Length: 66
Image 1 (cartoon, rainbow, N blue to C red):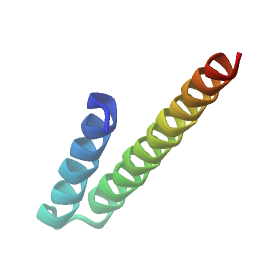
Image 2: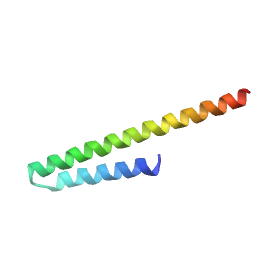
Image 3: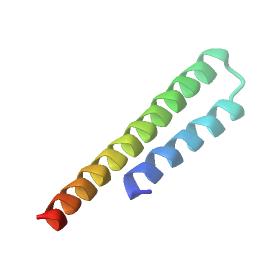
Image 4: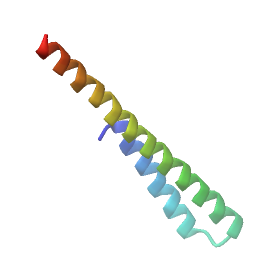
């Protein structure tokens, strides 16, 4: 995966740890919301990388066929 994807996963892990460490419900909820957002950004980043790679592969196949 890319550095950006790894960055998002690291932030999600930090948010998860923050949620586990707090005793205040509202703070825990904030950390859990942050974790969900970071996880979604990581998933979006991964989908984008796969889509870009698919396009590169398709273009290379077109050029090879020409």
